[in-house]
Amino acid sequence: MTHEKKKSELSKCAYAVIVAGSLAVIGLAVASAALMASARECTIYAAFGARPYIVSYSQFSPFVYLVVANAIAASLEAIAVFLIAWKKGEDKIGRKVMPFIGAAVPALLYSSTGAAFAAGADMSYCSAYGGGKRVSICSSDAGRAFCGQVHLAVNLSLGAAAAVTFVQVVTSLALSKTGSGDGCDSDSDSDFCGHGCHSKH
Image (tube, rainbow, N blue to C red):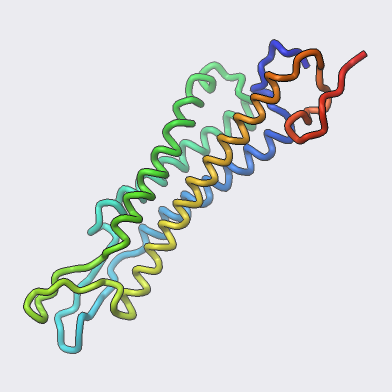
């Protein structure tokens, strides 16, 4: 392996970690989007005899943003996996696209997760019962189920954001290991995994 081929051929170990991490990002992002999108048409009663209130994730713009952002992030990460695993980073288009994906995915995940966390902290509606006071959506049994589903979706999105950060850290470490291998030519693909660099004689 020559040093001129700056490791877009990271190492087999690094590839495996990065691909596995990227697949985790996709799974968590898809699960988050699907779970949030299914949080709808939940009927809540503020009190006995009060008019029921139907709540849906679509009434909260940060939740809608989370669904859209996670879906886009999962799609972009799937493209990244294809470029990493099948194209080995050597495709000309891939070399141009990867930096965009690397910036867009965490931006989408962190911004949507932050917005959803803020919105989920105080979910309430104005009830005609009791003089139009605001009632917490999470105060009833049905409301608590809705809130639990929303909070789980947000936590999954946070997990996806953490996973993509992990992937980027691993990629940076693998690239730095490649760049620091002066005077040795490694056959083992294992600089990153801590097996050292084995010089050819």
